[in-house]
Image (tube, rainbow, N blue to C red; front, side, top):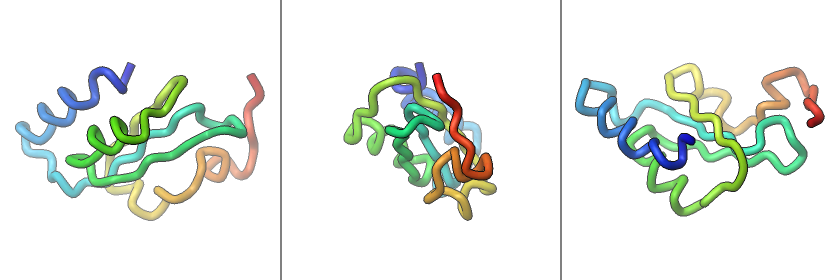
Length: 85
């Protein structure tokens, strides 16, 4: 689960040269009505996730393309479609 490994992943990525300011997004319960999105620079994402403590599956996305869309939900990215479980 990304919640358990995100700190190590980010530390290794930063050590390999990833810019600490690279946009990152963690999406818990993607496309569901109770979806939550945590957006932060990649260097801050582990602490933000720890503070938010989201439940359920979490998807982590890292990259500059996220800078413009970080405030949107996954359903918005999919054109407003929600996937039912």
